[in-house]
Length: 410
Image (cartoon, rainbow, N blue to C red; front, side, top):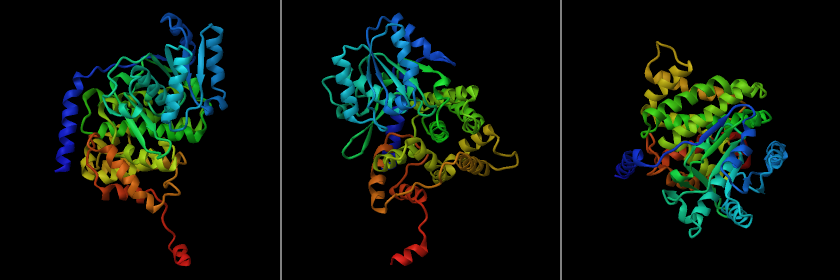
């Protein structure tokens, strides 16, 4: 009965989707496209920009590429650089107050998914000052025109510059919640591959696999459309063709640009088709242990695909054909398994671990509860997971127990 309820909700959302006010951000793309920002701000006659970023971006020296451009063009700005790795309610409230105090009228998110989610949350608070963030969580709670948001991703993973979602963390409980509303889709996105050149290899790997997870989950879900299937397929192909190479040679500008395109296409795909149990499990894991989201997705992805079983054989077989990891003589099931193995092989080639260290057995029930609460009834997954299904996922990503060590302890 519960499965029927979930599918009923998902069908209603899918039927209503064409009538929602969808839009895509205006894109400025290519090496050096960061330089277009001052002209854009002046053209729109905005008075003061709030730049939202994090300390890691400053330490990496990337702010030195943005702030002088604003200063040289005479663009006034305020700077918020305290965004946490998982943006918190406190981060958003601080940025919201700074925006008001400095009399800003446009937001500029500069960084990975965290500054972008922080900027989206801040814009939501600006548009709905009478509401707190708890009131805005869930589906379609904002429904107002937001102040303009310019996004400048410095990684190629989240695709947040194209999505209608923002993930926020409660500092005390470490629970994550999501705001989902078409108004959260940013107005502008600047995709400058030069900003990603200095990314360390491990971040290139994790963010690239994050983008792959977005594309795969959008493609295999039950709410995809003709356009999201095209976007997801394009993203998957670009990632398979470019991620290993850019991990080996981070200064390859063409591959960096292709990865930005892949992340953006995947973001557009899942903003209409949604994600699935991989993300639900990863958010719960990250909330308790602070595991970076892209890394969690990468480790969890092949296990969830396996757990789906025959419900995903056909779409995964199509992705196997697309990426060249199948052979004509294979059955649909064999092709699907070949794609899952290709994901595992890519993880290994990128030095992504097979397990997440430190998972405690006593935390697994809490993660199961949080993951299932996020996934159901909203996510149009190929198979609605039970508690037993989700437990298997967490057990499979936990390091194997050394029986000899266990005996000695006993």
